[in-house]
Image (cartoon, rainbow, N blue to C red; front, side):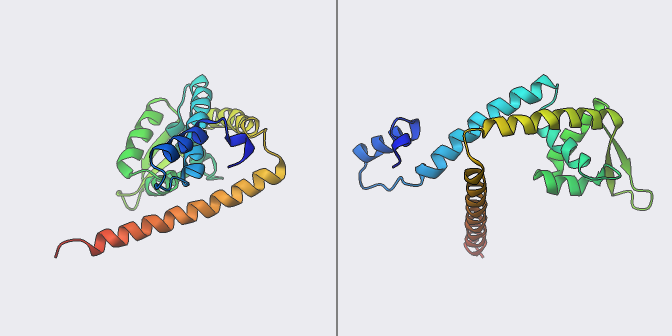
Length: 182
């Protein structure tokens, strides 16, 4: 355990487990406990920023996805669902709110009416640009305690962790499929 970890909440939790259940391996808390606490701190600060602009994380996610779709600022609902990692039902609720606010337009494809396009409006583009400027400045501020090399190293390690989590999820899916009653 690093010197800086001795007084933090996760370090204390690990010490408590060691006293109560010394046989239990809780070493994963070194990573996941800190990751979870970091995420909660991140989310609280980011949500405050989004609220100042009258939006939220879910709405920003859709608007940002459309903003990156240059030059048309348009994607199908399926593309949006895939990129924002939500179900099409969840996306529909997000798009409804954004459409009511005049930030996006929804249109059916002329040839295949099952295909729905979502397009960023001028007001949506103005909002997402303002929020993006503030959002990325805030992200830079929040990681100000890390040096450039540390940021790069952490990003690399988190990428490896994400791959490990995806592999574990695939294993669970395979196990569940194999354990299904015949």
